[in-house]
Amino acid sequence: MMSFFITLVYQPLFNALLFFYWLLDKVGIDDMGVAVILLTLVVRIILLPLSLRGDSSEEERREIASHVKNIEETYRGDPIKQREERKKLMRSRRKIISAELISFSIQLVVSLMLWKIFATGLSGQDWHLVYGFMPDIPQPLNLNFLGIFDLTHSSWRLNILQSFLIFVLETLSIFTSPFLVSRNEVVRLQLVLPLVSFLIFLRLPAGKKLFIITSLLFSIVLTLIKAIRLKFVEYKDKEEHKTDDEGETIVVSVG
Image (cartoon, rainbow, N blue to C red; front, side, top):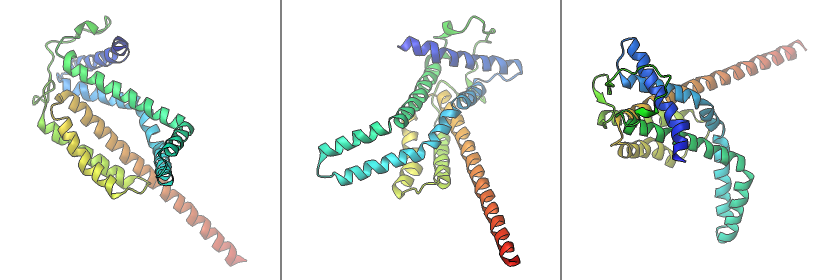
């Protein structure tokens, strides 16, 4: 099974990263960190349909959560009936749940393969996985980003930046969400999540951290674009209703 993921996911990602590094070297940018940023953007663009699908299923997830809460309250004294009703609910929403699991699994596999790149790939242990048609990669690899951050070691500065961007993204998501957000969700998303992320990713290699930071910036830009688009649609609808109301007023006046 592992060899399947290596061949299908890890090897293409590893070669894509090396190709970007080679391409950058040709234009005088000898920086693996920049190659990581380019790879991240390509991965996020490829996974964009999953991200958009996640947004469209937000309402469905909240609907399922609301039904679960109602079941728990209705059958509070009957745990057996409660379990049966939960199973019925999950069966009726099987497509939604399956899509969520597939999306999560794909992103998890990609994240694990990227972690392996920075753990073993860039150190030379996986050089046998380089495709035969790849150009000659300049060696030794420059594994420093901007001449400051060693991509194979952890960086507390990048960790702080990562947690800050998580805070920014969650704040934007809360303010642009069409759904009501509870106080518990605000605390969990704006305070607890950045803090927990800081502790969990503290020892993560800077290369993987750079991938996460770039991915977060991509998500922030995407969230802003969606928010602006939503505001534009709302403004357009408002203007159309205003025009319709003015037309009705003129007709009444003439009559």
